[in-house]
Length: 618
Ligand code: AGP
Image 1 (cartoon, helix red, strand yellow):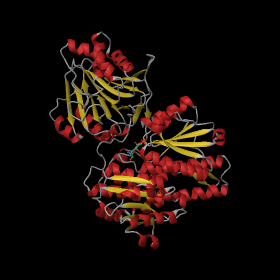
Image 2 (cartoon, rainbow, N blue to C red; image 1 turned 90 degrees about the vertical axis):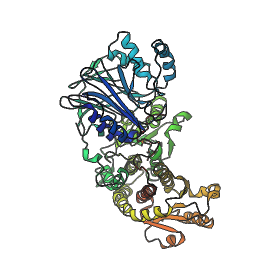
Image 3 (tube, rainbow, N blue to C red; image 1 turned 180 degrees about the vertical axis):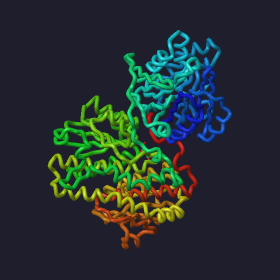
């Protein structure tokens, strides 16, 4: 959720930390802060509520120092404010800490530390859970422990999942990082006589592509030339860094007004890259070299459960559809945050597929952990981030090749996840002998048209802008879909909510008459997803019912569909797609509609209020 950066080297740390935070701002953006220490151990901390630009102005006044840590926050405990922004210092003023995650037992730890604070005549200076960490470290330092031991002790006392960076005035040539559980990653970047720490790669890429990802339980002791990892069992080693193959240009906004718009336009490419080499026609095969599950496992699957959250859940719902229709085996989907607390019954031979673009979403990781501990069922992660926690927990992964997604609203990773799930359905169906070579070829040929379907959908941007101009001030939208378009209706509504702040509901069209229809009047626009297909007539019946209540209907259907366009008030044509592939033709239009509505409302599209790109807290 929050973004963490750290630097130790020979340059002034402040500007480097700030630039790193700018590249991680999508992780959280309600407040931010930086702390630097100079060679003599003088510490300066600057924190500001609001966006990073507010901090940027303030750090001009900051003394320089070549060691430091920084943080961009998504508030959990305590409102966004200067005092609750990180870094947090110990009451002694010696120890500074930034954290991503939640200290679940912070009340208990506060009570325990209260005596020490009372004795010193000090009080807590924030409402955060994080502040107990520097205090715990400080207490151990006073008791004579080294900083490394004190940090290890403090981390050991925390309940929950935490990613931490810390520094100490008495040790100005080092920074420390720790990772406990699945609170998002910590990655160390190796420079030339300087080292970097970040929650995510984009902050490191301008400086280095040589990196090391901390594992759960690691504590890293970092100076300007080396890293030492201390594990929970107190053994230490010098890690071997790896090279990452990511282009810094991929994380620049380029000529686009927003990352979201750029990423919508990148979808055809993201799809082609994700499919490349994985859908072969002669002889036909899907994911032949990309799914490290034994063939016996694939053959023995009797049921597939697809899980995820938010947009990834909507991809999971569509994936369920394909696994049933393409692979021909029973499949279901579930909201990962509900799944594990229901004590679910998986039964024998269930394959669990976890969809998570970030690979860090705590609800999804919790569900995967539940599966591993209670069922030992095979798991496949569908994710855009190689080496992410989801890939570590899964038995096999399908890595999307969408490139970094910076906009908080998932766009290109949604279509990438769809392609991966479709390929997985083909792979399972093929392994189980349920898809003849002829049918498999046909399915794969259809998938290969997906990038062009998306491309042509994107060309409807102008029409989406016209509709947004007309309905940009509406307070509500109902989005209707049937069959494979029902999850898309939910995705359209989610996009409207998260970036346009407009109340929108995605409904199965058949459900509308069972209640939601009571909402409709001439002020309540309805978006109907109505491409030609087996359920088209039923969809048009629902549209008639809407029109009879005088609610304006915006239909998204096949280009040139005269009957439909004459039936509704507003029409957006998309390229006709085979019935199983309509998610690819419709997705860009629902994304662009939400984008354009947000634009007409003048909203902060890449950093919508209250949200963060990666949700690492429960
Ligand atoms: C999507 O636009 C949202 N930002 C959000 O719903 C997201 O899809 C969800 O948090 C899951 O994230 P993940 O794919 O990284 O697991």
